[in-house]
Amino acid sequence: MSGHEITVSRTSGGIPVVTESVPGSQSAGYMICVATGSRDETEGMFGISHLLEHTVFRETGTRDSYQMAKEIEGAGGEINAFTGREMTAFYGVTIKETAEVAMDIVGEIVADPKIDEEDTELEKKIVLQEFSMVKSEPETYIRDLFESQLWRGHPLSQDEGGDEKLVARMTHKDLRGYYEEKYLIPNLAVAAVGAVDPGVTAEWAEGALDGLTGGSRNVRRAPEAPRSGYRFVNNDADHFQIAMGFPSYGASHPDRTAASMLSAILGSGTSSRLFQAVRERKALVYSIYNSVSQCSDASSMATYMSCTGSNVREALGTAASEMSRLLREGLEKGELERAKRLVKGANVRAMESTESRLYRLGVNYMLNGSAERLEDRLAKIDAVTEDDVMRVARDILRPERLNVVVLGTDGKKPGDVDPLALGL
Picture 1 (cartoon, rainbow, N blue to C red):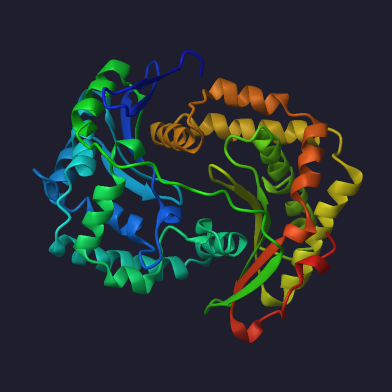
Picture 2: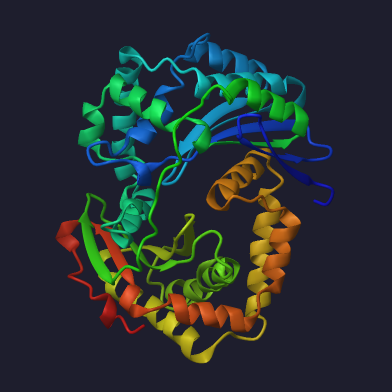
């Protein structure tokens, strides 16, 4: 992994261009990031970022969607996009000898989309099906529900898909207006990874995007620490999904890495505390794991479980008791080092994929305005001490901030849950 260089430059128009040249790479990936997402949407337009992300793939000034597909696949690559709470991104990855195809198509999608009535109406049908698909995948749906519960009353509670009824009413004029307001230079950044040249990448970005002048950066307010709360959501699945978690730190916070170690100790891997306490010793759940959802000015640290309705309350109580035990007794011998190696291994393996490396480079830059090498990330993990972990544990694992969401069939509803009474 050594020898990788990250270069940050700017186009003449001021667009940041972040490149990571990977020696020996046989692929090249290019991403255009737009600093707008679901938290930036106004009332009545919840879901417009995601619908726009879909629609721009329909047709550009010189290509329709079929032509794009033929060209990128003929170049040995793929194009895709994603919408988050704070950004939308469009990217293409190809083999290195056809890199210009990825650059050309991704640049045109962002800089010259058609966004007409026919394309908008067609894409709405697909996006509305996606709403149904997400709700039929409870393992995914529970994560959206938890974020909405934790950040209730704040724009971060607005999930990426938005409101189904509002999306159904959106028009191509709505999308065009949003595009012309948001897809402008103050909100743009470019990332490139693999067999890429910083100068060539900057030249492409300048030619493709420097014409998108005007506009201003979205103004955001950080969320206040939420109060504890509980929500039950009914669905048709007999198996229940549970989320329990807390607010944590923003992307630039100095304790972010220590918090990630805490999360790993609690619920990453089969040797983690919660997996052993809740699944292995008591067989209360089928699955259990911890996850951190990172934003620029906040994050969530949550435990996700799946179990039968009769086990919901005991699973929650056992998880809370294990967190309480950590606060009382501290870390076990070798526990932090084991978690460090687990997290470092996940980081190293992810960086072997051009797509994963591109995603991390683009998202990290958009969240905190800086680019972090893998070596720097690993060094930060190594620097975390047991005292650091226990300090952030006492700061994060507070019962007055604990939020719980249960997703399951109403006929087997476990009864209301008081997060303050779980024993944390």
